[in-house]
Amino acid sequence: MNKEYIIRKNEEISHIVKTGKKSVSKFYIIYNIEREEENNQYCISVSKKLGKAHIRNKIKRRIKDILMKNKMSFHRKYVIIIRQDAVNAPYNELKEKLIKQIKETINEKN
Image 1 (cartoon, rainbow, N blue to C red):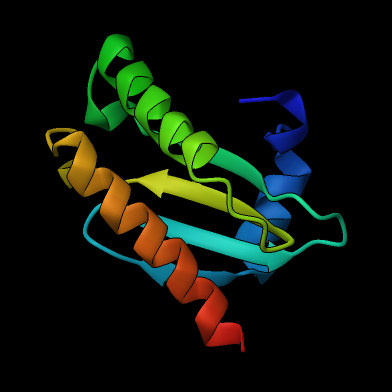
Image 2 (cartoon, rainbow, N blue to C red):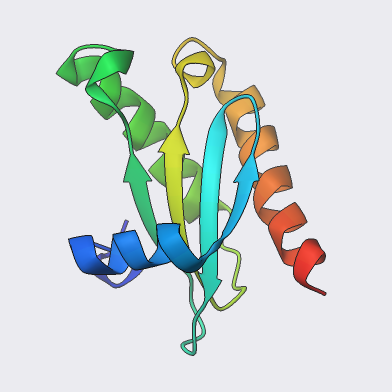
């Protein structure tokens, strides 16, 4: 994932969580707000409760891969929090649920 697509500042992340729209599913909690630039930005958060570092890194790599292969340009910033059920889920199911949930967040707005 390119640096231009990543949100790193804690202030920005907490602003999105406090003021953004929330969408909850079995695998993810997604907060989002509008953005002026064309591409989306993402922050992926995985709690230490979900497992050791190699497990957390694996799930983050999967999510980043899904986001980069399915480039969606909705002019938004996203904070994606991974839930426990996502750790053992197959890649295809993670992909379907994430894309569906992100598209639903856009449709709620319009």
